[in-house]
Image (cartoon, rainbow, N blue to C red; front, side, top):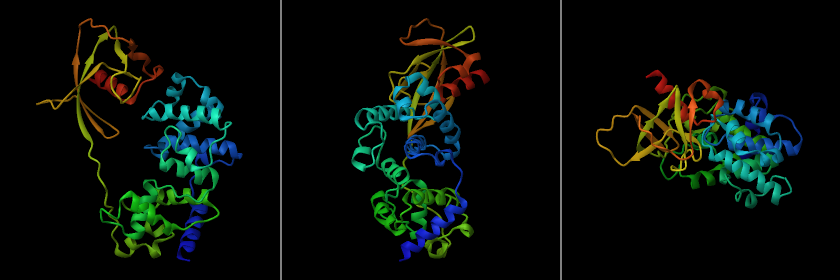
Length: 326
């Protein structure tokens, strides 16, 4: 009974307070499913505010599964440029091709088929089933996990393990409006139950929230320490142009344009010029200027004046900005 009351309160709050997001537009079913697929891939490790303009541009250029499956990689990565984690874009295209070939162009509506698609894990599969197909799934993203931890006052290491959170989410109950409910829970975490300074006065379920009763909103986290890595980055410059190479060496930024780099293992007295965080890696970069005529395969000279016309990852752009300032 308590779960039904929670569900009603959260949905009522959502109906009055939900954000107007481009992937929430009222469109026919197949288009909605495509919107959910694209937005969920983009929202992996990226905030909503950042995704909105990318989503609009992507949908305008690639309005359907068919157009996504056929797009060439250069255009695809240009549309994705600035979002980072480019493997998401490549997996998205592979998924579209499989959907065209094996599912008659229709997004699968069951967990077993979805989980086999490139780039789709447990969370994304659950989100697609709930939002696109109105099935009774609650995807545990960071926002929903936060609401759950605070509502039940989960603090201990064992309590905040993923497996335990999956069991505990039953407290949220179910509803015939599964699509809206999944989004409502995410919205509640994003807008009200924020990581710091939650706006409890506006929360629809504060009455039974254990953290609210205890006035303790601090969250216990399982911290993943970023791994320190060290790189020498070589700069070759000629007539206001920089030499870039296609990255076939490192697993990060695969097949994208970077400066020639080599990794060092635990160097001493390493004075980096730049620090760049990527996924779970903390990149310490020392820049060396070079004048030798070493030839690199898959290389080209980039005109710094036409920087925006190239498809470049954020790391490369940051290096160029540093070089121009120094």
